[in-house]
Image (tube, rainbow, N blue to C red; front, side, top):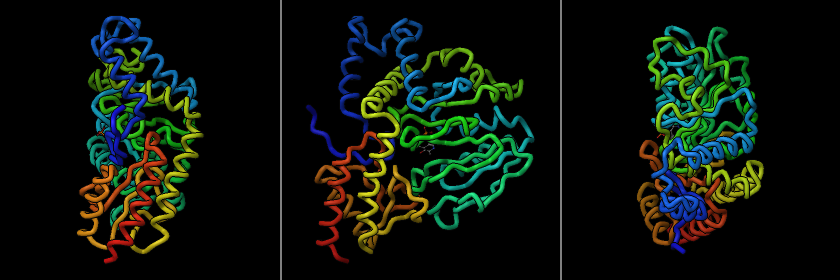
Length: 361
Ligand SMILES: *Cc1c(COP(=O)(O)O)cnc(C)c1O
């Protein structure tokens, strides 16, 4: 058994150790085939079964309706920033984006290459410390879709409720997919890079309502057209085999834990432990406004930057790793996705109390 630290990394992030151990065996000899998992043809019956299993489990766990396609794509979540407008806007059409952090800002920049982009809400001037409520913005009548980032990984904010709109709703759920129950039928498209809450880097999951596949302009490159991948079950070309396999193993694990509702309950418990600690003192200050707090990424500050450096270094010495905040806001950040154990959060809270007691500014 390896000696594991508690890994608070924002992504790639901690995975269940059982999944890692299973993967280490399968990489060498997959199901007694005498071949390693990453040596199998993507057209072999063994790998086709792996891909089917991953898709079916995702459909089951997220209750994805039949009129949605599930795609396993490459290029990272960031490639969706251009694929979405390229496929759904064509040129000159309109879309609405909510600007709640670095990842929405990057998506807005790309979307502007294709269409007329309206941004009725931005929290940038408050260093993205909140997400909007429904009454703080309106969506243009001629917008094709409304785009938002459900969890802002860097700033530690999350939409507690999703925007209500009669437009197609599009969400970047890279850092909170499968962390809480959602109604997929309210969305036109959901996407997520796997490396935060679902598996290793290398695959991006796209869940898209079938009618949207018909919107893509004729002159779109084949590989960048959603329908290419939808029609071929994500096997138009060689898919990211290992990442698809590993996501499947994480989903098996998730199902064994009781599925998405059980995860949601645990995620609330874990986050509350940390927020209660932050709220019990002025020493730690949470970055996000209370109503916008994320259950996945908790960004916070200490009284000054020197104490933050010391805090991060001392935490690492006792096996609490990856607590440094993103370079754009500094401070500290604890990322506690599905696979992050509650015991690790308890250990962090105990450390925070001790650190405060022995480092009063
Ligand atoms: C990490 C992240 C991305 C970028 O993912 P890549 O796979 O590195 O392109 C996009 N959106 C959100 C919300 C993220 O957390």
